[in-house]
Image (cartoon, rainbow, N blue to C red; front, side, top):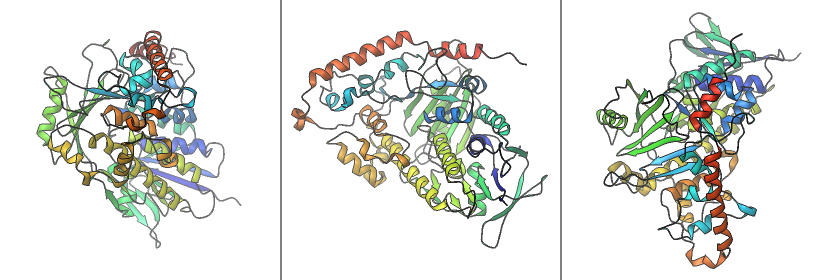
Length: 514
């Protein structure tokens, strides 16, 4: 007789409900009786987030889950995200003059398979176009506040790569509805005790109203509390504060100055003396947060930096969040696996939180042991997730260690002792060649080689190819491609709809209630 298996996900939010929906869809929980999936969610615990950003992988995830793109945009106050605009990261403002660069999602154009990067590097630094503007049309489109697609184009596709900004609480509600429609059982109750068996595995989760709940696999989505993986199973937390210094955020939600104010098509990240400020434009409000290092800035100063950014007329209600950058060295132990904040948290830069949830959910689904030991995939899962966390740390650190800002926070970030060894090795190599796809193993990477190029050359990093200039003889052809990209970008900025215009059109087309 086939053995019935069960999964208990403890905790809701984006992590719990995305994981539940993904597993239910992948494992066809609603179509057969051999698997049950339950989400146990505490009604007393809220969701962290004032506006979340994502990576382009989210489109594939939503499409797989069978969530209509227009419905997602309407129900989560979502907007399109074409990348991140970094302001004042490379250097501090001088006489009120700010600097910025864009990290777009679109990969640099490779005409006939050849890279334009060497030809851009060999141009005169004094008058060449910014890197992202030179190698992709998306920079002009995003700066012009245009959308990445046209009305009525197929869902999840368009001329340009994109992700979304969304309201985290509203996304959790949408994922709840989708997961339950796929057969996931939803319990609202409070965990009182996690009991272990004689082998150190979880034997049951004891709740107030539903008593003892048992499962074959327990998934910990309890956030920073890490009720199962941390408190019960004592999984070691590996802090990474020696590389990533920020450990606090003060956040706020603010309305737009005008209801029809232009809607940015990217996340705005503005550096300050001890960290940076995110500015995420949703449909109806902006989610803003000041991220900082408590070793370099007081809570009171951070509050002042945020309020200065918002302007004298703003009267926001703020919230403070403390976090420790790091991750569980083992995220799958015996019959328990952690997803989301319970597994680890680095910082709210480059949308790493959501993409790590996506990666974990996909791996659990593919590794799920339909028979045999439930922890059979644990070693491989831990190996892949640890590598992914370490590689993201390298990418995040890249943003900090290249800055020429003079404040102590930024000086400390340039200290060689604060730079991971692998990143230091790559930076040394990249002084003589640009990042290559062969630098990275995509199975454990979130960011590709061109993502590194956008940050490196946006921050002013120098790769010296001048001794080998003669190895790149097609200068004339490259200049024609650069001119064509510039012309296409200008045309796309005229042809694509305004970002707010498209969002308003999608929301206006909401179906009438039955």
